[in-house]
Length: 132
Image (cartoon, rainbow, N blue to C red; front, side):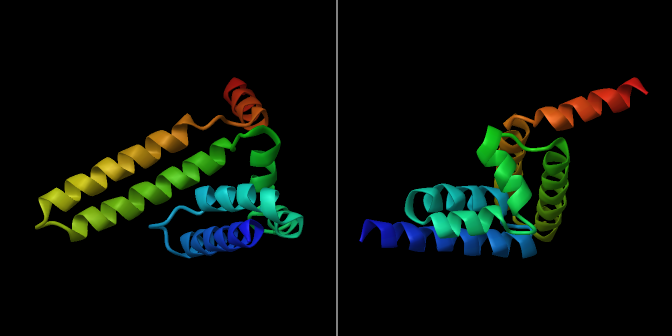
């Protein structure tokens, strides 16, 4: 019963991650990382399926291997968050309390993303490009 519940939970997080890939309001990566975690404990088949996925697999493998993300991933996520939240804030021009809430939420998300460790590869690549 617990295994079934974990598998269902994993698929809910995969679905949220896929929706997040299409709608920039939802973050994709955290949902897929949770799904990966849940599947690692409940279904080796679904765990492997996520790791071998052509779009999400490389980032998830990197996360599982050394708990890091690339600088490019951080930049892309930051730009998407900033653009999405700025558009949302603009649409809420008469609702200042909602604008403030969205601003705080965006700040928390950006702080979370930029606190993640970067992969050594992306750090080394950035250092070598700065030397040139």
